[in-house]
Length: 116
Image (cartoon, rainbow, N blue to C red):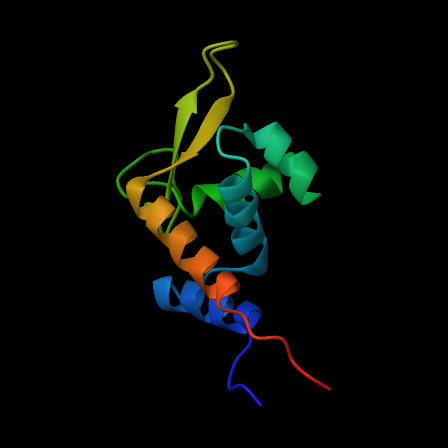
């Protein structure tokens, strides 16, 4: 039997980043990892969240000191004004966010199937 599956290891990693990170925040970050360059409306759609929930959730990972980010501002994503409309924001991973994505990808690649 293995000590921890890949999902639990990934969740533990988020807990290491900040113990207060919620499931909705983790979901928002993971969808951003898979769809870098999406806006908050698109994030809400793919994550099946309301727009306010998606916005609050992803802003947790914004850069510290940014007025867009909200605490704990983990610095994993940045949001840029959408050049198409100048109102919405386009979300991209920071270098630190790409490192987190790579670590999570590694956890998934090393997953061991549970045999029954």
